[in-house]
Figure 1 (cartoon, rainbow, N blue to C red):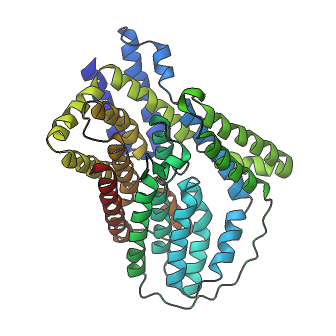
Figure 2: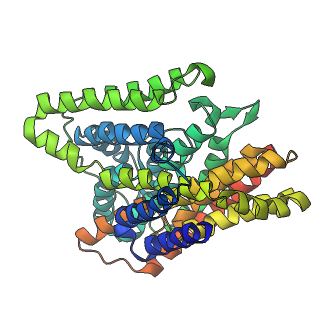
Figure 3: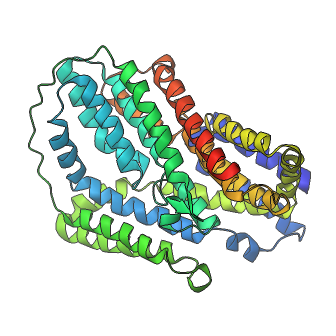
Amino acid sequence: MKIFVLVVFILTYAGIIAFPQKKPYIAGIAAVLSCGGLIVFGQIDVLRIFSAIDYNVVLMLLGMMVTVSAFSYSKMPDFIADRLISKMPNALAAVVFLSVLSGFISAFIDNVATVLMLAPIGISVALKTKVSPVPVIISIAVSSNLQGAATLVGDTTSIMLGSFADMNFFEFFFLNGKFSIFWAVELGAVLTIPVIIFIFRKHREKLVYESEKVEVRSVVPTVLLLSNIVALVAVSFIPADKKIGVLNGVICAGFALVTMLFTAFKYKKEGVKSNAKEIDISTVFFLIFLFMIIAAVENVGLIQDISELFKAIGAKDPFLLYTVIVVGSMVFSAFIDNIPFVATMLPVIKTLTASLTAVSPYLLYFGLLCGATLGGNLTPVGASANVVGIGTLNKAGYKVKNSDFFKIGVPFTLVAVFGGYIFCWFVWGI
């Protein structure tokens, strides 16, 4: 059965690469095949499969999608960005600001939602200064993807790590008396600013920005979103042995329910439809199927086998092991979704570091997150934020060549990953 599960696993990755739009269906079929085969041969029971699903992650992701959707629909992000952009002196300053703002917002809400909020403003700024909107939107997208790894609630991969390693909100900032992953990501973000400045160095056209006087529909979604984040921060201090495993997910689901009730009451059918439209239910099911696949992979011993390969490297040279994980994560995530890769590697690292006492598990966890999350910016299909950004440009009538993306994505990624790579090693590896 090990060979069968391995073949299904490899074919699943190949299918995701070849048909990224069909990944929920591919993962679903793979889950049925791998788990079904193990059930038939009595190697795993149904309860074990469904217990392997991290319902805390699923509920957090779904809940945040609903709340962020209402926040976006309220026009509050547009209002804030509109007012701030009006203070910018020229196109260069505006693009740099939009990129930084995109990163900041993405540290707390979904990357795709951030791009959807800021892309219309980016196009408007570009048109007012006769700058091509293509590099502007690409800069916004890659900045959004970068900062998602900075906090517990910024990205699906961060939520997965927080749940798997039992990290609370503030442990993404400081952990065991040391600087945590947030600072590694921020260093990478700071290093990317000169890259953006260099790319747009010739665009110093004066920005004559006429405010469109965005009207905020309601401040309630903003209050709910901020309250959700505060609640997650508060419960993160509850010791793991005294906290219900799905508490974070229940909190997010609770705020989502209140948000849906408010939306239905305030905006009636129009608001409900808008809210539902922004919920990426396919990603939720994709994640559920992945947890099932990983359960099958772990059951037949493949996780242990992969760990042994890494162990052979780490026993000789921890720095080489760390480098392989960061670079490998970056390369893999440039072509496949980082969610399945991170889902696969988290248990590998846990098993690996259990036998390598000289290596901190957090060094490898953070290296994995830096490479897998930031590495998605190497290609146009490496991250959902990039896909959405390019899709927005296509809808607006602009064709985006791969070369257009690589000019920004490649230097942006290499600089950001290198910054996080060096930071994590000096803080957690030495």
